[in-house]
Image 1 (spheres, helix red, strand yellow):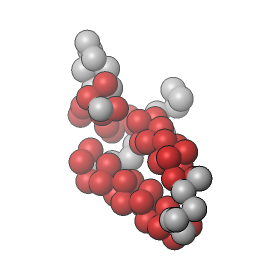
Image 2 (cartoon, rainbow, N blue to C red; image 1 turned 30 degrees about the vertical axis):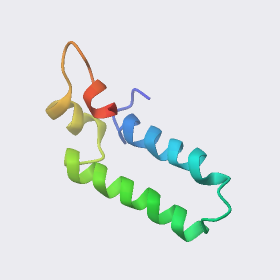
Image 3 (cartoon, rainbow, N blue to C red; image 1 turned 90 degrees about the horizontal axis):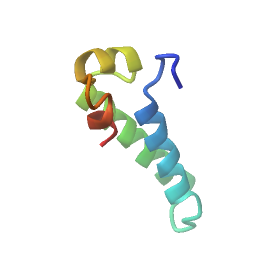
Image 4 (cartoon, one colour; image 1 turned 180 degrees about the vertical axis):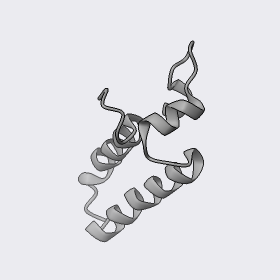
Length: 71
């Protein structure tokens, strides 16, 4: 997004989870919320924040950029 607020890799991951589980009628909305919340918490634990600038400062690389975060 370029505004260095919430990490784009995180928001992209949340969007992917939304698409993956949106049509799964076997999961209730609370289960989907739990999946997204667990992903968000795991991301913050791994990278220490959800803030783009803080993550870039620690994990970005001049050659790969944020590819390691996205992976």
